[in-house]
Image 1 (cartoon, helix red, strand yellow):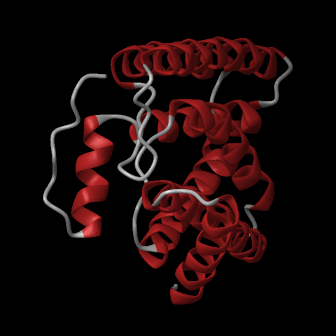
Image 2: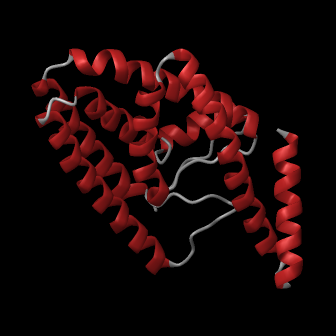
Length: 211
């Protein structure tokens, strides 16, 4: 949406001038404001659509687990807000339906197996690819990269404990939200995720190198 780009540019331009920063820093500010303003707009649309489709709570739960990993591990960022919004809506509304209707039908054993499988897949992806940066916000400091990788793995370990507690207490829908949320988070960090979103964005897929 053009108004998000316009607001982001104006905010970045104002901040850059006030702080007497470089053009490179302005790009970083612009990226940050895009995420912040776009995130607010996206959150409002998500809440409305989720409520209308009857999956508000499952979608919120999935987003919380997703964000717990994504915030530190990073991942793909689509340049065009409209494509990002539509893709995110499809993924998370779909995840909401899976969480709401499939989760409660699964046994605790199946949910436990899925949690363990999810954990080891995520651990592999995080060790190999996290943190996954973007051209607008590169992470060039090796110390910072290592710290973010460690934090992302710690967050994953916290998640697996929480998910088993949810399973133990028969909170199957929320346990399923954890499984799906983490799967989505590791997908956008992985080479498969980058190739998928590059295709949607109309870009030539670039191999996601080992961090």
